[in-house]
Image (tube, rainbow, N blue to C red; front, side, top):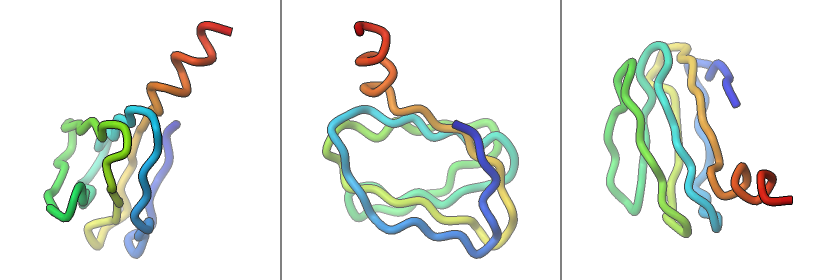
Length: 79
């Protein structure tokens, strides 16, 4: 998936049973994983492992983010 985050975007914490990759295609995005916060800068990616509590938010600017739920993709490939 690819989407633009409004400068005020904040997604509540979540966890799921698959790997999720988040890629900052344009701008910066704030990530939180297991209680630690860090910034993904343009061109950087992070992989959230299964069952890892995580959240995303914009860094006060509109940002373009790409992501992929790898377990979902793998399950679909094997159907």
